[in-house]
Length: 195
Image (cartoon, rainbow, N blue to C red; front, side, top):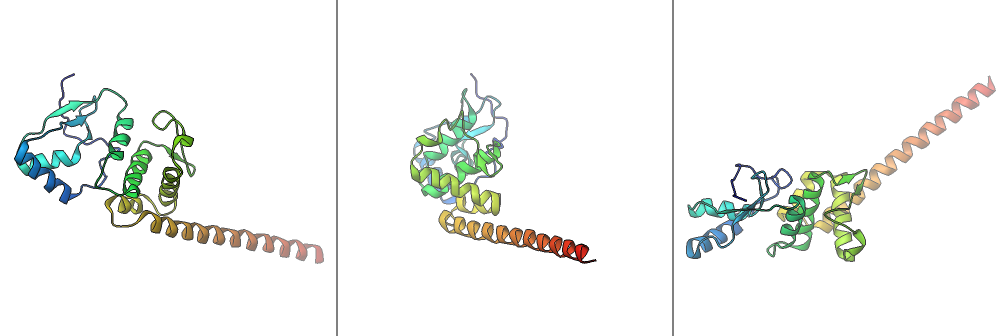
C-alpha cells in the first residue's frame, strides 16, 4: 500500500509529549546517516509511530519517508510506546494509559481489556500496578496530571500517592455529607414524633 501522509497525528497520541533533546539527537543521526526507519502511518495516513523522527526530519531539513501499518493502529501505538528506551517505565505506562484513555478504554474507574490487551493476568505485577496507578491519576487528578508523568515532570508513584490522598479526602467528605443528611432526617423524624 502506498504511503500518503494526511498531515495529521493520530488523535490517540497527538497530545503525548515530544522530547526536544531526543529530537535533536535523532536529527544529528539523520544528518550523519539519513533516516533509517520510516515514519509509520495508519491506513488513513495519520502518524501512529515516529513522531520524534518526523520532528527530527524537519530539524535536519529532509523529507521524511513513510510506511503504512495495515493492522490495528491502537495495538501498534501501544507496542511502539513500550519500545522507548529513553523513558522510565512509569513514563511509558503513562503514555500507554493516555493512549488507551483516548481510545475509550477507561470507563467507570476501570480499564476495559480485550483485543489490544487480551488478558490483564498476563501482565507482570509491576505492569498491573503501573496501569492501576495511571488509572487512579486519570480518574482523580485528570489527564493533564498524567501527561506530566509522561513528560517526566512528575514521578508516577508520587502523583499516585497524591491521587490516593485526594480520593480519600473526597470519600471522607461524601461520607460526612451522608452522615449529616441521615442525622438531619433523624432529627426531623424525632421532631415529628414529639409533636
